[in-house]
Image (cartoon, rainbow, N blue to C red; front, side, top):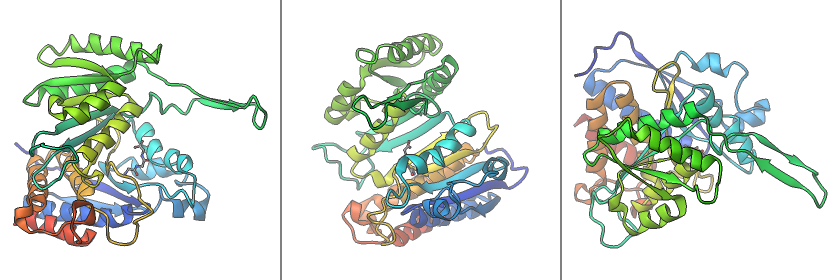
Length: 363
Ligand code: GGG
C-alpha cells in the first residue's frame, strides 16, 4: 500500500554532460506522465552544475555551497558526466558524481539488468528472462578511495600508488543490503565478487565479512567467484546468477558487462541510495556522457527512464515503478512497432522513444 504523501517530493534535476542533456528531458517526460497517472506531487528544480561546461566557466565542477543547495531534496535525477576534450575525466568525475555519492553517503548502488523481449543478446540461444540480474555495488569506498599519491615525478623512479579502503561499517552495510535484496527475489541467491587470491589484504577481508554477514541471512543461498572467473561464467551461463555484490570497482565493471549481455548499455539504470534517507539518493543511467554521439538525438533514453522508475520505487510509489517498467517492456517488444534508437537496430530519435514510453505510461 502506498503511504499518503505529506508534501511534494523535491527532485533536483542535473543533466550534466553530453547525452545526459538529451536523455534527462525524456526521463522527465516519463516522470511527469507517471506523476499525473498516480497523483504524485513533485517539485522539480533544475541545476546546471556538475558539467564540464560549468567547469570551464567557473573553474570547478560544483559551486562551493552545492551540499546546502541539494541536501534538502528527496532525490537527484542525474544524467551523465564527462567530456575529456574539455576536462580530464578523473577531474570531472571526482569533482561531481563521486562527491555526491560520498558526501550524501549513497553507499548502495543498485544496478539491475534484464534481457527483456525485443533485446538482442550477443550470446546465442538466450530467451527473454534468461538474464535477470541485480548488481549491488559498494559505492563510497573500496578502490575509489582517492588515497595515494605520486613520487619521483619526472625521474626514472616515477611511481603512482592508490590504496583500497575497506571499512567494516562500509563493507557490512552494503553486504546486508545485498542479502536483503536477494531475500526479496524469487531465487534468493547471492554471489560475491572477490579476488582474494591476488589482492591479499582487502579481498580476504571482504570474503571474511561476506561469511559473517551471510550467517545473519540464512534464507539466502550464497556463493563467491573470483572476478575473472565470474566475468567468464557470466558470459557463458548468465542464467546461473541472481544478485551479485561487489566492491566499488568490481561492481562498476560487472554492471557494464551485464547490460551489454542484454544487447545494449543504453537501457541500464542505477540507484545510488542513502537507505537511511538522511541525504538525497541519486538516480542515473549506468552509461556515461558519450560525447561521440552527443547532440544528434541518437542516445537511447531507456537507462534514464528506468532510473526514474527506481526513483519512484525508492520514494514509496511501487505502482509508478511497475507502470514505467511495463511501458519500457511494451515499447521494447518489437510487436509494438514502437520507435527504437540505433543501438537497438532502429532509426528513431531519443525524443521519439521517450515520447513512446511516456504515452505507454499514461495509456
Ligand atoms: N551516468 C553515469 C555517468 O555519467 N557515469 C560516468 C562514469 O564514468 N562513472 C563511473 C562510475 O560510475 O564510477
